[in-house]
Image (cartoon, rainbow, N blue to C red; front, side):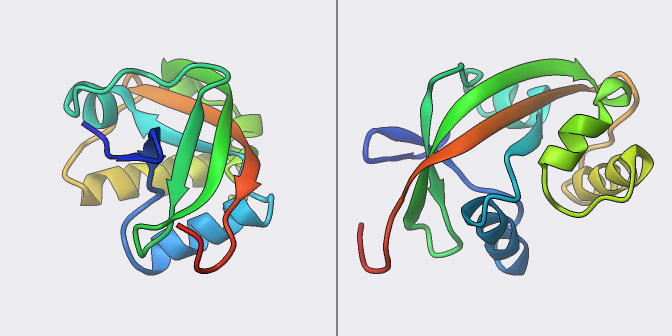
Length: 138
């Protein structure tokens, strides 16, 4: 199960360290409004339910402190090969095109020990920031 902070499910983006810091900063700057997960790896193996529209989530930074509250605006499940370019753009990570997005995500999940094929179910989560915590706030 995922952790909880202040009564909300925790969202940690990417791997700890530089990647998590970069992705969290993109969210706080308003550039990243979506993230992708794998149904089997991130939900079924973790015994975690899918998010739902309107749900609030605690975004935590690399230190483990909550840095923002996110509100889920859309949850879509689709095969990896059908993730649209519009979603990839909303991830805000500077992908050149959908092929670049697919390559980067396949590589990421492969490094995590999971092989993705075109039929692998992706959870496409869109969100908006509804509150940020200032430095020193818990």
